[in-house]
Image 1 (cartoon, chains in turn green, orange):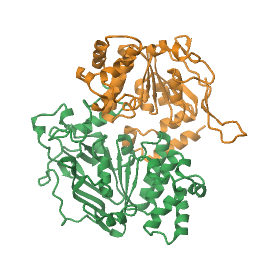
Image 2 (image 1 turned 135 degrees about the vertical axis):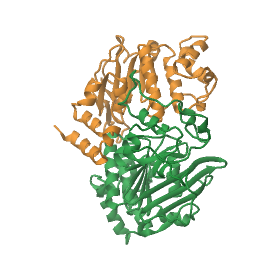
Image 3 (image 1 turned 60 degrees about the vertical axis):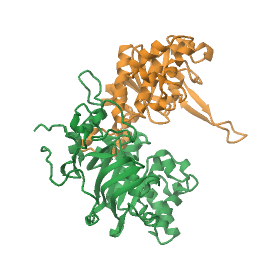
Image 4 (image 1 turned 90 degrees about the vertical axis):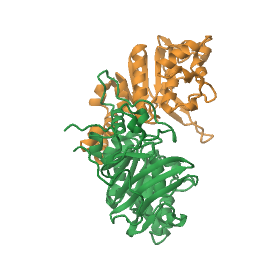
Amino acid sequence: MSTPTTTPGYAGSPPPSPDRPAAPADVLRIDGLHVQVGDLELLTDVDLTVRRGERVGLIGESGSGKSLTALSIMGLLPESLEARGSIAVTGVGGRHTQVVGAAERELAAMRGRDVTMVFQEPMTALNPTMRVGDQVAEVMRIHHTVPDRRAAGARAVELLDKVGLPDPAEAARAYPHQLSGGQRQRVVVAIALANDPALLICDEPTTALDVTVQALVLDLIVRGVEARDAGMLFITHDLAVVASVCERVLVMYGGRVVEAGPVHDVFTTPRHRYTRGLIGASDLDLTRPDGRLYTIQGSVPSAGRFPAGCVFRNRCIHATVECESVPPWEGPGPEDGFACFHPVVVRS
Amino acid sequence: MTREFRRQRTSLFTPAPVVHALRGVSLDIAPGERFGIVGESGCGKSTLLRIIAGLDQPTSGVVEVDGVDIARLPERRLGFLREKLQLVFQDPMSSLDPRMKVRDIIAEPLVAQGKRDTLPRVLELLEAVGLQPEAADRYPHQFSGGQRQRISIARALAPDPQILVADEPVSALDVSVRAQVLNLIAELVDRLSLTLVFVSHDLSVVRHVCDRVAVMSRGEVVEIGATEQIYDAPQHPYSRQLVAAAPRLRAALAGRTAADLAADTLAAKERP
């Protein structure tokens, strides 16, 4: 990779401009998203684009704002939180939704149809009092993607078969508690894919699963998304999972995107000091000369306790006075770049 | 050793069904050894740990700690075990009493043994786990997850144990903090010459900390051996599956996709 260059006119992020519509292939385009509660800013200036057929990872530790980003896209923010900026979704058949400020009616039409979501914990994502077949059928009935009740039931069984449940007709009649964790997550994936969405958001979909089940569910999600040529936003704290699943990645810390780029480049030649530290701390095969693991000093502050300026500076050994102001974004665009005054120097 | 649990009776005319949580488990852990137990949820690793710690009793079999069979001892005669063996749990929030100050939490095992004037020892322990002396007068909720786990470790070390048993001590922690806590455990085990029993679902974590590892599945130990050997050349189909299914950063960057992971996992199960 060449040394990063600053592109004039791209400092931080551009103001959200309604006159700049999403390109046809963009299923999701977030411009300058801010989310705050009272005076406390939880997300700052988030830019993110996902195109059709593209798999984008969003990584970060707890409190970095990745789940909040997902909830913002779905229009599921609690009422006490206030969002500013632009979240443009181009759904099935080119239907356009501006999520920020949209009416609930409009959002309801988008959720489960244009954009769907797989959550971390399948037991809480499913309704415990409803047979799983009916839950898969429900999302198709609500959005009228099947002609009638009978067709929905038949299609639900077909979907349960596709996600690899043994004896799908029998499984459709089961209640969530009668299934294992992996089977439940397969049902959640079936619901998310039922209406052939344009964008699938996965928020830590395999964190609650055993590692052997995780491998199979990840494969299932990727195949489902590929078959529909949908875009995917994959949120996790596990770098190895992102590297197995995604093409592009954004690194979040303290409610900001601190680095973005192709997965291979970001993980092999990270530029932001936080990304570098995170990779070092995750790689259990890599040890210091004394046999210990590489670490990042300190711990992730709670929301609102991040320092002003560079959010990572209180844990960064390279931080200087300069870091007390917000570092500008360096790189060709929001999809590839970083925000750090003292980036890791790339040896050529 | 075995451990069976009776489930609730479903009929008046049939005996209650039995769950075999542990089936014929045998293992020896040498003094000073760093021993790992790996397995997925429901494999019996926590039941085994509770029995080793004298918190539960086996249905049949013998558990010897320093030559004493603890399996049949009543609680009042387990005092020696409480001094000798200490535990660190997975979730540092639920294993620390939210209404106790850190100094009282760390001193509790000492107080239980009738020791007085515990503050000097508490301060010594706080330093050993990398916390400031001011931490003594704060409450658990004022700390982050990693710091709480340091408090749990300090409490476990308070009675100067010889055996440290850790049940998934880093799985609730952030990645950047996980490495710190793993380093701390490794350092303390070295410095205090402790015997470590480390339970995890993650083979790569165990590999970093332990010399020898037992792989458990469905209540049985299916493979036991040197960590490197099991990591590099697992023999039992289940261990092979466990190794194949774990996503690794380097392999993924070299082009190993989710489809490859899934295919390898299934192949590992079927290979003779």
